Length: 177
Image (cartoon, rainbow, N blue to C red; front, side):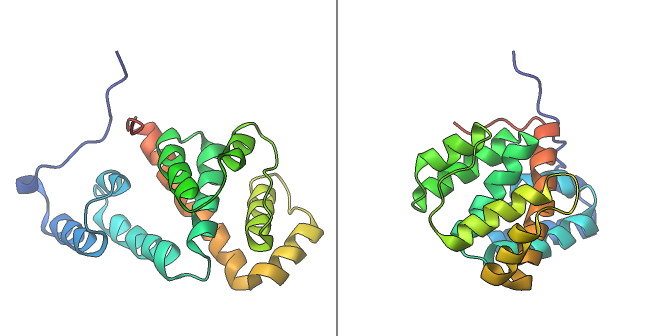
């Protein structure tokens, strides 16, 4: 038998006024209550702040949808966040990435990425997850290709989706079939 899911759902009639407003705003903005927000709603101000960041990073930043999704997969793999990995790797394949990219990431190998921006995202994420300040060559290339705003967004994505990956992993959210 699988370990029980740890998300503690709050019945609608037990939500505080602040929690109810945050959920209403989340559903209005995203169309549904996404799983991480079921974790974060216990701190409604945190949930609202993370929604602002998440919506910006996913919808309003300078990175393409492919770049965002690749970054999410890289950090989900780092944290072994199977739920996040599964959902976002599927999205990447639908966006035209070959499955071999995700097979390589899983195997701890550098994937073949021909797009210069996607290569810069991958390399930047890799050095960000390692000890120290990383290679000047990788950083300088990322700055040239993505700009300082792109670097900032990749780093924020890594942080945001670290929280998502760890949250769903620790709350034992089942991987979708």
